[in-house]
Amino acid sequence: MGPAVRVPQPRQFIAKALGNKGATSREVIRNYFLKDFFANHCKIFQKRPIYWLFDSGKQSGFKALIYLHRYTPDTIGNVRIDYLHRMQRVYENEIDRMQDMIEHSKNPREVAASVKRREKLQKQLKECREYDEKVSHLALSRIELDLDDGVKVNYRKMQTASDSKFYEVLADSKNIMGKK
Image 1 (tube, rainbow, N blue to C red):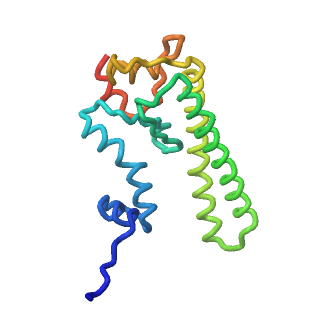
Image 2: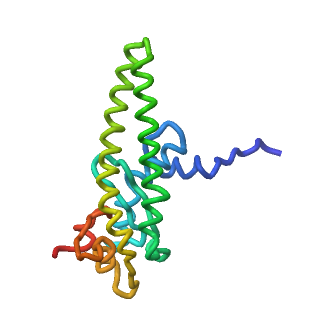
């Protein structure tokens, strides 16, 4: 019998195929979903994605993917409460932890890194809070979608509250909805 052939674990196989940045296969896959998945998905589906990305903005404070065909009028509220609010609490706790490290560490390098991390977290938390205001209007509107209307129409509809005000909460809205 010949030597045993080592078969890579599924996560390692996927990470290698993605060829992204990261120290571990988990990081590689996570980075792909955070940075590249949605752009690739839009390209494949010719700007008519079936996965929609909630994206708070440039600080990447909050991102969440939803599957269009599983959408209900409660989806936006669920994303807000179950994920966005949880993320805000994580930022608040991490900011407190960084502040504690700044106040109690004797290592100047550790203090500098903690200050930098705290500032980044504060920007992300601020972005999340501003984003939460937009999402709350949409969640309260309990928006109904009609899949027969198509992605362009529904992408706009899902970001338009009951008061007819448009709140841009989904990624790449201008390209997906077209000009209007």
